[in-house]
Image (cartoon, rainbow, N blue to C red; front, side, top):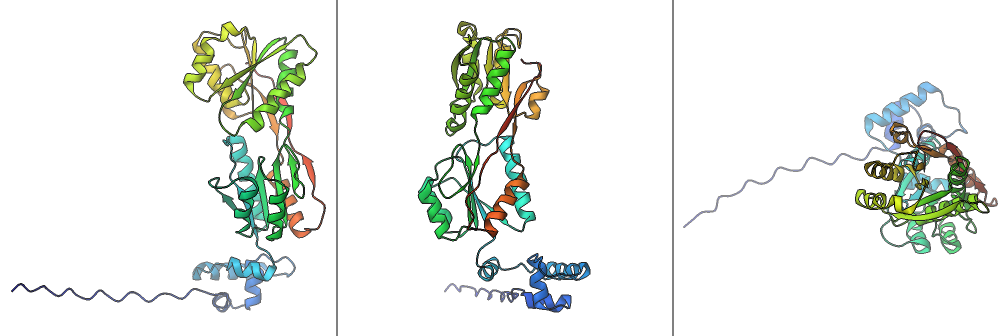
Length: 345
């Protein structure tokens, strides 16, 4: 007979430590629970001395205490969550910096910023998914959200819906980003430099048409009524695609190109130079966004500098709308453009 050895009983699990409460923090700091609440919720209506604030924060850190967001929202009547759906278009360095600046500014106003992924429904259907999280404000980049989506968000408790795009949406605050001015500035600059046969790169990446179409139209507007021509140049952001375009460049008869942005400018400039096309002698090049890498290229890249609102300004708009939800939606034009003339044009 084979005996199966008895396995020793597993050790008893360590007792679960109880979740620290605000009462624990108050005892350790030697203050009242109300004082703990005032300090940790950054309440400005009550004056708390700096030494007391320091004691409360140190006690909370020592105990590992974190305020309960849901309970705080219940007391306030709304959350402090600002929801920012991830853009459905490729995001470049300029937008990333803007978004980081905005998140820091909102954090300084005691809001929690949550980014929502792009998978799943879009437009008004996406608004229903956002509403389930009960944000106090939603900042929607790009287009797609309609009046019904805004209404859904407001019925769920969102005090502010802010759109960043080319048009206003009924019921929402709007930051209008008119990209025509970017193309207009580039086209006018190239014409003033004596260029008459101007190509415009139109990215093939999905989601960028909302920006590329108005930029192309802006170039056309700037040259309307002149002796200049505009040639549309579809281009994927790939080395091979740029090489194919550069290989037939001389057959196109172009003496200038606006490349949509600096990243496409870098891609196309390298391909043109590989084909022996001199910049700017044979072809002038202008990008947009004013990325630092453009200043490191040789020749240095001329570009359209975009003037975006600061994160602080947008955060203040959100805070104003949250505190006064009954006010009329605000509309602001927030995109300015200035050409920085460098060696490539």
